[in-house]
Length: 301
Ligand code: 6CS
Ligand code: FE
Image (cartoon, rainbow, N blue to C red; front, side):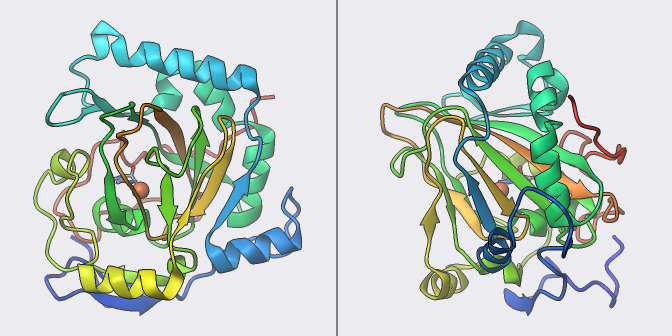
């Protein structure tokens, strides 16, 4: 445990839930060249996310979807710790390290236009902190309770500051009814310091639970935030994407509609923000959750 008085994002230190005003920038690449306009960057700074209407071609969507569906059924991955299953039915909920398991995802993660966009926001070279596929099959996909990714990555992986973004790529249509991502716009500018302490091997619970546990704000705080910021649903056809700040308060409902919802999440961190020791956990999590290869990504083309 390396939490010190200099930690601006103290969390899980046993105290109650509190709110800390974010001191660090959201857009680090002021004036940096890239695909986003000044208006796009301002909106990202204000709301914490940016939607891309067409991030993947139809061919890329099909290739990613086919490959990833095959992964879920590969015999040698059945007991792999990177494959996370719903606790009840045991169906696949998430697969981590998809950029290592799939050449197509690896190429997509290094697509020049996506890298340019992320580097423009983060104002530096970037590496992949985490990649995963979240499956929500029709009728039975489980929810993800409200949280800030950065709170987890800071506490459990030792990520110093919120200088990371995720890209959520839709491989199926994301409707407002089939468990699409919900974000509280503007919530990324306050850091919620969560109550409690991180249990040992907590990821074994946190990746499968549908309930609020350590690392999620209490209902009063979530109510205050929802009243203040509102909640926006990230919808779009297969191939669309949402880029969002690591400290956005977000979550998603389960999927009881017949329409599956599968998204690939790619998490890019600045090479100026590489992992230290966990700030609020006794041990590091496995590499598939917080990678420690900080080599800057090079475009695939
Ligand atoms: O623990 C984590 O790192 C992950 N859990 C959630 C619910 N979102 C982000 C991340 O994949
Ligand atoms: Fe998340």
